Length: 170
Image 1 (cartoon, one colour):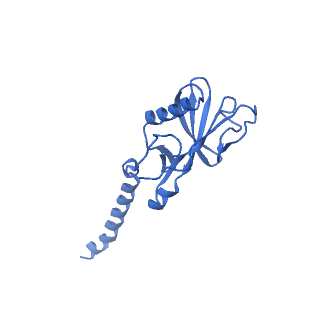
Image 2: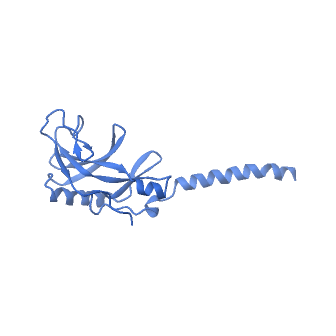
Image 3: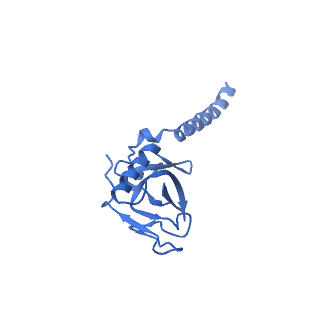
């Protein structure tokens, strides 16, 4: 009987650890409505295990960005993207066929964080910065509604700002 009583705390610890691991593996895309429909101000990314991931497919994100890019004449079609951390902030960089790079900030979504404090989700900002020369360094990234200047060639940074704020969560 004493052995059983001694095993109960061990059993409880094992159950607690397995539940914690199960929570880490929750499919967040089933819990939160992600969308890249209008590209700007849409929640389409989240952070899990210190890695920023997409809550939409690669094709959905590229299609949404390319529609935006066509509408605002940013350059040729983007064929790839990269989620990148610059100065402790997260961005998505889109690589156009013609060598241009467009960058949008990923902004922590406060509304979802209030509802689900253990999950960090990101919405796209309303400013897109497009450049050739500063695609790998030195500026031309969104900072609020503006772009940081390209330190290599000041004129090599096109800013596009649209939308009025975050899209309501529904």
